[in-house]
Length: 335
Image 1 (cartoon, helix red, strand yellow):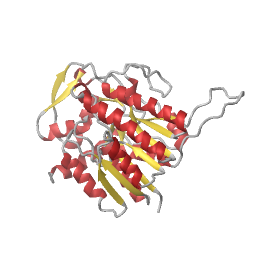
Image 2 (tube, one colour):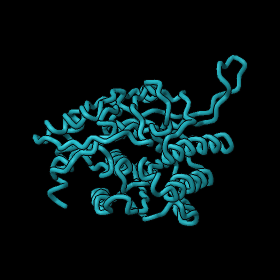
Image 3 (cartoon, helix red, strand yellow):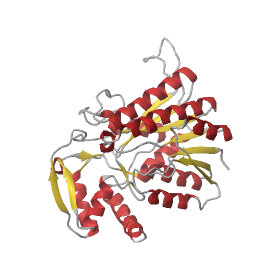
Image 4 (spheres, one colour):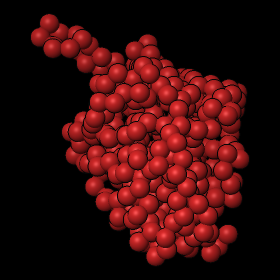
């Protein structure tokens, strides 16, 4: 049996998939989640039901913005590894309820950093986002690109997380790895994201909203590919680089960033075309203008991830959509 690992956001989309993979790999997983109502909590409870089938899964409801509650989680046991996937998600919603993003993504992350610091965590992996690239239009997007023009508060909080983790790596030697996820989709996904929204609208014969008339491209990344990358990184914490005269770059603390994307952007209209064929039913298309929070394209350069792990996302969009639709049909029949 491997050491205990803490997975925050264990009832969320990516957190659930990671916890399930870790359990299959022999880890003891301690999950926390606040089970908020941003989307239907019944989906979160159903995910937890799947995880609770394993005797090696332990769950505690916890609001990460509550400093004393987070400190209590870390006081109960020592976690050599922490996968921090909890966050207030949703780009558009960050313009509606900014306080939720400050509480969960800034205060909550600070509390996790403190828990890892005092608990002598050997590696903190945390979820960042392609949203940090904001107005950057040079494609493909590279980790070395500028990220100082966020187009949403959500993206700004994720960039802040990266800076906060870097400072803890520098000041306290906390090894930390930030993962810039690109439009993750798949079974057990989030109801506020395009693949779910489009699929649901087609089944229910409701209009599919296409902002900028659907002429945007996204680097849709299948969840199993994301989890494979994360699983390979857990026991590979970054090391600080030495300060030597021969080094071509200045010394760095034990902090790394990786893009986790499919590196094959797909136009939103093409995604909808594929869903229509898979479901066997045409969509009703509602063409809308571009929103200020949207970007025209995301396109990941994931070469650094491949060099670090030997793995690159490889699931085609058609295969991923077929898997999602098959899962959705079953889930829809049970709710």
